[in-house]
Length: 395
Image (cartoon, rainbow, N blue to C red; front, side, top):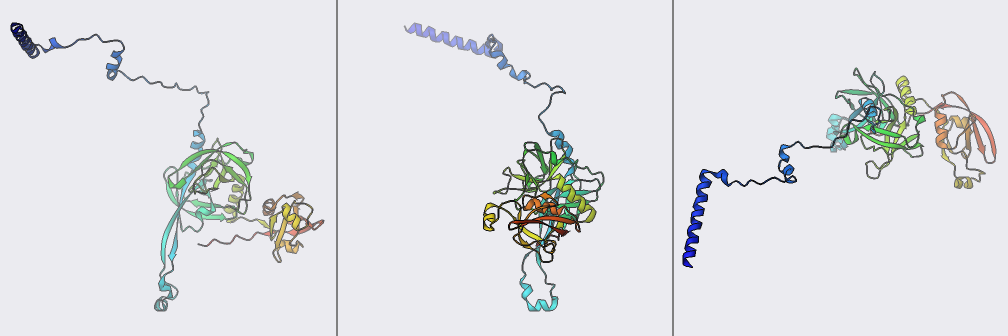
């Protein structure tokens, strides 16, 4: 038994020595050569092979593509970013009550002020440099800087503004300006796709997409004259004054306001129709202001409760709640408590319709006003006056 173990040990030692010699002088003899299987070969050689990806073929020219890039490309160059700043007084200086300073400086007491910046958007409507934007974007601004989509910037001046519609026109002195193409808001319908272009939160020019949610929105308490296009295209702070365009890239509205509890877009935005914006813009450029007709009354819409309180037979028309002394309505004999049913034979269903219609009349024009007083209905002649300007906002 011992001899067998001795022979096994000697054989093992000899084998190990042989393997050692071979590994030193002829190592390739010891390489294991296995036949590659068909399944394993591609995995092992994947680094040496090009990765094949599935790529969609180019669609034929006649195939429509679900994209609004053509509309965006057409309208975006004419939409600008507007940066405004103004100097505001931060707090009352204690020096104002110091008699020593008043003795030397009088009323010219040094004031503590700071510069406040804000932003908005606008639409270039003329190669002469006219830009349409919102009144609230540029009101009380000391400085206005306009940044174009091509990177150019220049200061601008206010040509005029209209607080009643929240529209303003500014002008800058640059050449080769791209201009927007006006569409037709009167042909727009609920469900039409629209794009909103502006500068939300100052991040830069941005395009969002949605549909027209409603037309002719009024009684919102935003402006004196309201005829809004409602859209769910995201509109955020900084979009004010920007363009609302159709899928051809034509302007159909000027973005003006949003309904929001958070300060951001919640799918309810409002734009001023291009038809109204165009009329206001043309008057501002030609006259520096908007001239409107005026009756000199305060009024409210009729409703069943009001009709019952005044013992009136119907709820149509507009209730006169106040008449300005020596104003057009007062001189025509209109009194508080009267109901105005229409003007110049046109039936006007509520106060907004009456206000808008009278505003279109020229100052000095004669208007036949249909009036109901208690149970009697008659017509009076009123001479339309010029609507006085809205009170200036505190700065």
